[in-house]
Amino acid sequence: MRPIVLALSLTLAAPAQAALSGFNDSAAQISVIVQSGLVADALYQAPVLGISRGQSWSGGRQDWHLRTERCTATVQVEPRRRSSIGPVSWVLRSVGPCVDSTRPIR
Image (cartoon, rainbow, N blue to C red; front, side, top):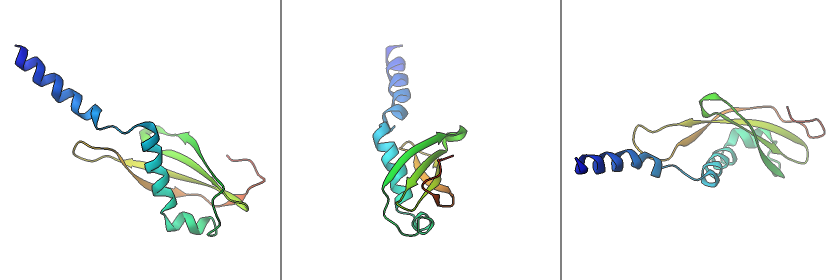
């Protein structure tokens, strides 16, 4: 009985050990965003002055707000789960227009 319980506990613990910390997960999301040519073009190739996390959606989608001197754009990423054990990978889902920075973020 003990070998079965031990094997079961080790098997169930494996996926949890593959999860990234909150810092590393948000860094992975930001990396996808700043490496995108679509985002760079939406920001008119201007330097990014600030990145802030926005709303979290069902299914794991996440909004991010990127601010430049000229405007602010909202970008959304979504998770692409692997079929095997490992960290979640992120893909760019949408890039909003860059709106005047003096207007509040929606």
